[in-house]
Length: 290
Image (cartoon, rainbow, N blue to C red; front, side, top):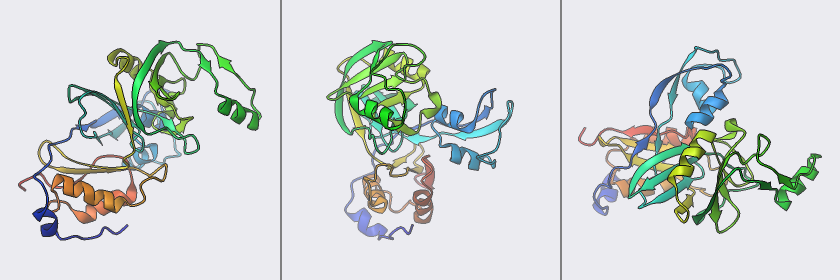
């Protein structure tokens, strides 16, 4: 995709000073493959697309990996602008961020609604926290079960067959919730019926850290840009899974203006990041002062 070249001077003349640094979360690490691991499971745990994980390690996505094998895992992401308190979930990014007193306290990969069952955007609050919640199957999902020729269930008691797992954080308004899952590899994918899935250990941790009535904001930003602690520019771009952001070039220019970064951005490198949509924070400019 071609990026429109704009005059750096024209941008800089009417822009505010540099925005404060946003935190980068995650890191580059060496991961040792364990028994039972496969790329989708590893990607779901760390918040990395398994296709990208395979490509970065020079291995066949459809091939086998073996216990003891070493993989390079880069799961760096850009956190949205700090909130005073509460939870922020960015749908295309498939990440949940917990803020405390304006500071980022924790971050987790999440699984979200498939395109036909979209996770809702907007402002919510935590309505309830429940352990071992019975799943009352919505009528719409019962209809889907019938259409697929599956046995129709109306209620699923707590236990290994309950897709809500052990921890449930209900949101209001609506019936959406944040919950653990009995299918951990489905995290960091769009496979749910609208709810937000988490790895069981992540859901247990969040359950203890968030209070009833805490604010929750669900946003939709497939493109994020940030300046690291040393001034380095990073760009992160995800597929527009719900077709809500038709012009990523315009979104890029908005971020360039916000960060006052026109003179630092490597426009060709940014074009490559937009074209690949790998969903990871990639360097697109030198540290400030270089």
